[in-house]
Image 1: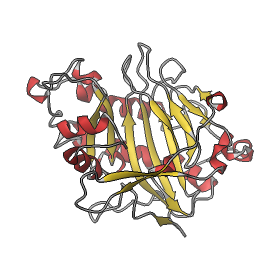
Image 2 (image 1 turned 180 degrees about the vertical axis):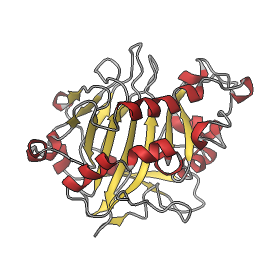
Image 3 (image 1 turned 90 degrees about the vertical axis):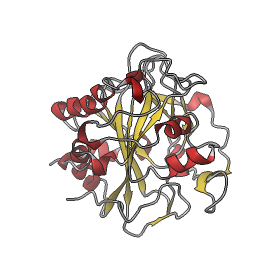
Length: 308
């Protein structure tokens, strides 16, 4: 199976972003991926208003959606103790996180339930056969090999909905802020568009060349028993807004995201959703996964090797 073409490999890392539509995981798999997470949220019973659908196809479930809802309203920021536990323990599970502002003070949903989900994460690649197949596909493996990965492992996966009109803004960040390795440069995000992504519905924006400036901000776990569970160490520089370049891609396209490149997405104010499936690889050979990262491998789910 062919990976990246010679012309794609010759591009600088910060420009090696879009792989044309239809590349992965193939038209049929794209429809299956979208079909799992779209219709799966449409038949929730009224009693699930403050809960998540159960059972769901492919084993998707969530035990504490109230906590996940609140955690999703400020991922990576200051969370209450129960919210933090829900988030911090999601690394080896499949859990639901809701859009900000979709519930009133009494917990009633203000939008159709199927439009309330922000994302489903962080272990779709391990527990769901559709997403496991997409993650470990021969095409993904070929791309990893063409980029020189020797022992890549999958550290997390997410299905992001970017709901019409309410899909939240993702502030500028570097993935290594949250998924830190020593040395740096061992983390790669693979971002698969399941629908066309445009400026209007919240496509990604990048600062070309920003992957060479290091990481000055980290999100880390605080000591066990602390009230916050998560803290932010350091701060980001004032990135120049004029440097961002939008990356609009068609359905089925792949965007490769260097772990230190600065990127963001704006709120989706359009009438169209922007579904994506994204996951992160780490080169395990000669790499130390920071023990301070919020996400840690567990006995139940060590980081699985990509190559099968």
